[in-house]
Amino acid sequence: MITRRHTLAVLAAGSVAAPAVLRAQTTTWIVYTYVPAATLAPAKVFQEIVERVAKETNGGLQLKYHLGGSLTIKGTDITTAVGDNVIQIGDDGMQQGNVPITGILRLPMLITNRQEFDKALAVMKPYVEKAYDKRGSTVLSTYYFPLQIAWSSKKLTSLDEFKGQKIRATSPEQIEFLKRFGANGLTVSGAEVPSALERGVVDGVLTANAGGGKVWKDLLKYCYEIGLNYFEANIAVNKEAFAKLPANQREVLTKAIVELSPKMTEMLFAEEGEEKAKRKAEGMVQTTATPEDYKRGADRMASYWDEWAKPKGAETQEALKKVREALGR
Image 1 (cartoon, rainbow, N blue to C red):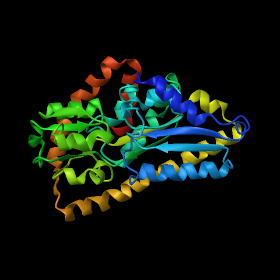
Image 2 (cartoon, one colour; image 1 turned 30 degrees about the horizontal axis):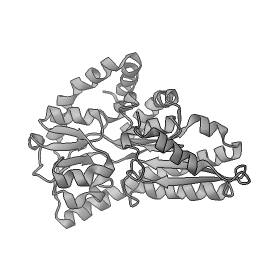
Image 3 (cartoon, rainbow, N blue to C red; image 1 turned 120 degrees about the vertical axis):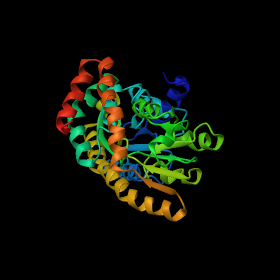
Image 4 (cartoon, rainbow, N blue to C red; image 1 turned 60 degrees about the horizontal axis):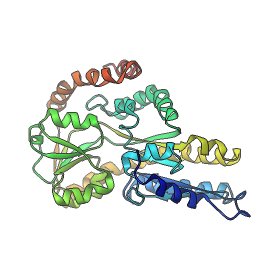
């Protein structure tokens, strides 16, 4: 559960409240993201969403966007914060603890390219929507980052060099991968990563060039380019608050998010190559994983996929089976 909920509820209520004469005209919603920096594509595009919604509702619906760490809500608590209406929109990328079935999309070595990810996402969509609905939220869109690769302040140029390192992961599934190669995987919110790297709480991170690689580059020395999995985020709204919006505002908000959020994905992939080249020019030690590395990684993880799903119940097992069938795995 979220700490200091009453304080946050007051914050939310204070943001939504307005003088009686204006209440029928203006509604203000709090938007909160796990994204720690305004320079990242999701933050840039969300500003476009904010502006479009304000313009097309003639100021009737105002979205107040907050970067990760700017509110006293942990990145791992965004799902709950949306469901409890502490915030009205969540850009939710650290949801596995609250929505375990979404971990299928991040099973290491299961999905290896964009075409496969899109196939898997299509299979998973109804399962993800159902899971969020049970928690009081409605998913409007999903976007994703390029493949998560490994970075460290210590030497990391092969699978064997994971051994003994403390690596920040974004899911229990990544933590299992790290464990199977002798590393210690830790969950740290994006906003806390810089201090964790500086203090040696973690040695490295799993992230994309266009994600944390862009933000935390000055604290890292090595990039081992083995793609574990993609990192997706769900843009979810509080179900009750969404239903209470006037129909025209609900339509404007939905269209803005559905139409603009794919731009987040496209920008991230365009940035990936650009950022990789920049890191090389800056002196980052980059090592491309070999086909043998990928085979070894997949062989080590294949048994885990079904092991992971079994204790999570029949629905998760069914979803994984459908994803594997869609991917031919």
